[in-house]
Structure formats: C-alpha cells, structure tokens
Image (tube, rainbow, N blue to C red):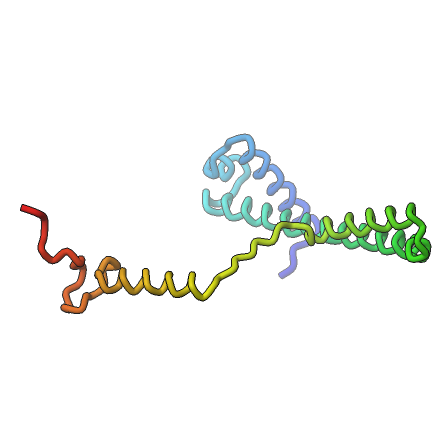
Length: 158
C-alpha cells in the first residue's frame, strides 16, 4: 500500500527531527520516546534509512551537476577548437585549460600506482614462501607431518 502525501510528509518530518536529535547527541531510545517510534530499533532503522536516502539523492544531484558542467565544457571546447587547431596561442591555452578542467572533473589526473614485477622478484618471493612453508612457520604440517612445529626441532638451547 502506497502512503498518502500527508503520510509521506509526516514521515519525512519525523525523520528530519530524528536526524537533528541524533546529530545533537540524543540516543535512539530518547528519539523513540520523544517522536513516538515503537522501539529504539525502529528509531535507529528510520534514521539510517533517511541518511541512506539523503546520500543517494545527493549523489544523484552531484552526478547531474557534473554532467551539466561537462556539457558546458564541451560547448566551450567546440567554440575554441578551430582557433586552437589553427595555432592561435591564446586559443591553445584556453583549450588546454578546458581539457585540464575536464580531466580533473573525471578524475583522470589522479595518481596511478604502477607496480613492476620482474621475474627475479617473483622468483625471490616464491623462494621465500617455499622456505616459510618448508619451515612450518605458517602453522601448516611440516614434512614430518606435525602441525605447528618450526624448523628448530632441537628446542631451546640448554
């Protein structure tokens, strides 16, 4: 059953009050008692739902704004591009600024971490892991079949 507009408005108002109370340090028990929730858990669930909805709606709004700004950059780039391609230094500078702004908005300039693995590094890692396995230091059964024993089978020095 779909809630009426009045019920939706009432729920939204109660959720807003609950969020304000939580921000001001109220417990979920206090929120439930003051705003008429059936339990502490109901108040907690309602506040969580409201916050999730807000984050989703705000995320959609930000994405829509980003798309609008990208469309504006497209228009500006289209207008300046012929002059930039003709070699006009000022137009080139402007085009580069537009391209830079677009790259920042899309996160294209974020640092990229590259890890280069060589065969020697892989071989060294494999040897180290094999040594750990052979020594039983990972708590796995050793060649003798006894779990948890380390390579020093002699025990502590006496």
